[in-house]
Image 1 (cartoon, rainbow, N blue to C red):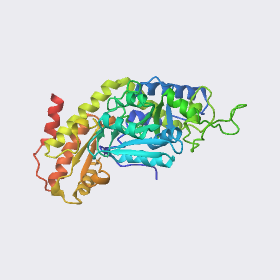
Image 2 (image 1 turned 90 degrees about the vertical axis):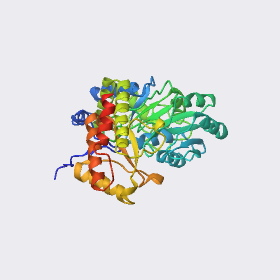
Image 3 (image 1 turned 30 degrees about the vertical axis):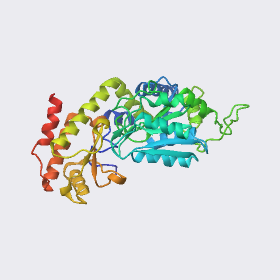
Image 4 (image 1 turned 90 degrees about the horizontal axis):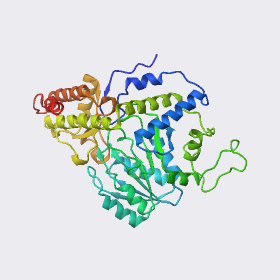
Length: 405
């Protein structure tokens, strides 16, 4: 049988419902990887993502794979065995950075705050001084807690202490304020499946000149494509596929063969960036802020509590405490009813929040009024059917007040 997925409105923490314009772009026919049209499209895509990341970095490109491929490419290319890496952990995805850095052979140091909080820059600087890392690896928006870590002061801290600053912006880029160059970020990676409004499978990345120098210092060129006298130096990057030194040469003017570009994903990634640039970055962030605020006030209007420090919440996702009246398994039952009866998906969470909160996203193509109001109306009906006392129409009413104001 042909692929025929059911109709769904994906209002969880990602992936989200892809923008139909992105899907149409991905239906275009393939061309050869060195066709002049193909290489020109790659160059256009690099330029578009410079605008998305707000950077002048020449090395702004795509890593073929999901957002985790981008994370691994960054860390495996920056970190040599024995290097010190500092990770401020405030949710599940900080722990992911720890695991990947450890797999790179790094000496990993962590600082932690309770889930639902973020770090003050002074706390991070104190840890930098104490551990003297080569790399500070930080998540901007951690969807497990919905918190958004302030970054504006971290670049200056890292430069004063000669530390490279890597940021995972998978869940935040395009829907929250982000300034690669102004904030002094050295490497940033993202994914398409959140605020960028596309499918998972391509990881945009931007790399500063000083990070490029570190990566190129480890360059080893594959046998058979090296130019005379070109062999490489330094500790070889442990991955071939995720070796950013080779990936940069593939995307650069030399177009050195490394892999076959994922052409269909390139089309999708280009369209995600084109649409965002067409809308305007400031307008896109304001759109996410508006619809995120409407969802926040909507769940409060239903009488539900919100988890975490709301002042540091991402625009594009909210963590809602599961009503006690639903019982230990009622949260999953309510999610199932929402999916089965209304075709709407919301998320659960991980670790200490598993079974305690739902995560509701308003991001990318779904950061729009009808999606917010429909989700709130459906959630009210599911909770009323489960016997949870609610204010009739309270969710939609509160959200409409946000929109009318």
